[in-house]
Length: 92
Image (cartoon, one colour):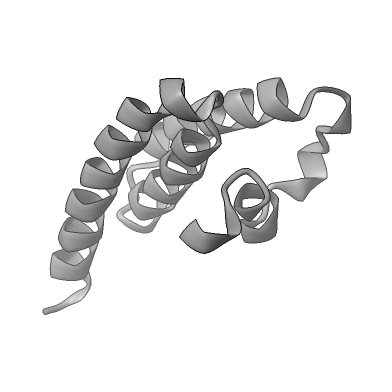
């Protein structure tokens, strides 16, 4: 499977993960998992050259992260670790 096939498979898995994360958000009490999945989906779109979709998804992820972290939010922490901090360690 080439890069295009891998990107399609990644996107499919991420869409499924997003549906699960959104469904669990009300029970969990925040949308950290949703933010992490959205940020990963943005990366897939950037790799495919779909920068408009990538920026939209990244913006949504950043808004959620900012809402969760409040005063602790650091724009420079747009990293894998920054999003890992939003989810329970057993999901990383």
